Image (cartoon, rainbow, N blue to C red):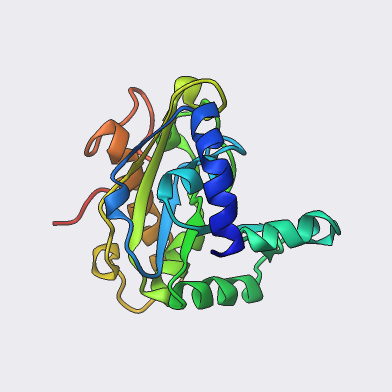
Length: 215
């Protein structure tokens, strides 16, 4: 039994009970390397997705956390790895792709920031998940986190829904580049939002933030 498996076996029942986790579509998570991409509402999102996924999910964490002597070994053992959030970090991108190629499950929040209580369809989407999807060729599992007030938290039901994986061919890639990375990220996030809101549904009065599907 690995350290993570021990941690999961020991603490998952308590986490699932405290956060009243209700998971759907767990069977959609590939057994090999893949990306899980989710809307981002609160710090607790990471715990909830990890508990629901039934397998280890690796996340980037800001590099400052790895300078804390007691914390660094623990978060590394749990699958976290450092990223420089002040700008492009080539080493963290390479590390992400290496983990996917090794069969790991990588968690990414396309919004880049937490938007608790805000309609995710109106938020800005970063290009990072599209770039990782292009370079790794890995399937991307869209995930929607749903909870009261649009923010995950303890002592209320938190629903996690894993959608059908998106293939490389689903993301409209031709030759890469920032424009295609951004477009792919928007496609991924549209599929995330469709889990809750349905296809091509937009908030009343809001400008569409996501691209239309191409037949």
